Length: 485
Image 1: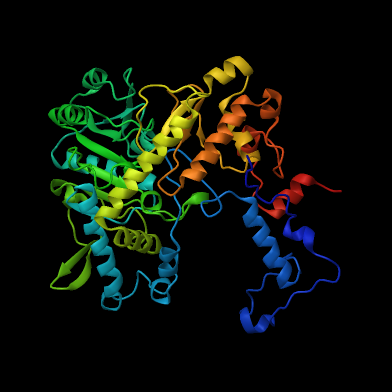
Image 2: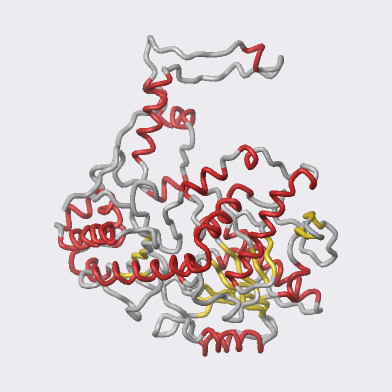
């Protein structure tokens, strides 16, 4: 079995500067206004060809959706079609500005209005705001909507219930909105324990946040009963859209009787989101919550689109301008290209790929809970840890030496030595077979070799706690830490 290897060990650009290198520069008085010159710049002076080679080599050191499978569970890192990138780079897109007069941006407003309608159709919601900039901000927006709704009805509800199988940012989003977070456990089947949920529900409950399928890749089979319990308590049911890639065209949050849903356009609808951006986290709601959506709202009056800022019950803005337009356009293009049947096939292929890959590796890795999964699955390296001393983090590092991106590890926390794998619909059977074989080879390999991995990368294992506390984010910081030579 051969694996694709990335390129490693590219020098820093400052280390490439030679005594005879030169750069082409313009006169300062042409480009830089007087008094605004920076005199302390220390820039490398190297030829253009070396700059191009340097950044090309750097790109080959990284794992990404364009050079291989990127199976981060709960992140849906699918291949990003290039037609969407080309469209978002059009001058009419890159030059649009939110402070333009509405008459000069009718095309952009129409596009966003139609995207809202498409997301309503996909989710079963009645209204959508495109304003939130990311999934977590969408969660936060949803919690603000819940707070505004209960306040408008004279109710001071202070608690939000989050299952232990929910998406990882749910508790933080609820806490940021001022709620006390109550965690409820999963049952023996990996789904929400309805008895525990019923005991936690009260007149203090503002909302229950559910990810369905949950982070184990299991569909909440009792979701209808769960919704009945939540609504009987007077609370709202919130859908985390991180795993929407599993259900498009098959079912929807609206059919499951959710009241609020956030979308991860940068996951489900194929926009790049590595490195912390770009993202977009629209929020959809049922009709009774529409008055509380953030301002402004796009309105269509006989074919003319405008932004309505005057909404008495709105929670206000959740970011400075309307939305991340380039990401919204990419998602719109992706939805149009797929169509309803195509989106359903996306989900069907994602579920098929997940279960196929799972079936190849469960002999070497433990499978907690039910075997049938949706778009992602969680296996455990618990047996490897006990018998060989090989932990989930060792498996993840060894995959790097095989030329593959690691899956999510140690999440969700209810699975010991968790490996959370989401192949998405993008990958071929051949790629899935290679990834499965890599996992099987690691399970059979010499434990000492696995625990020493990665060996082929420019930097081997790092002290992750120290790295998080002592950030080196620039050349200057690096020079200061290195000290005099």
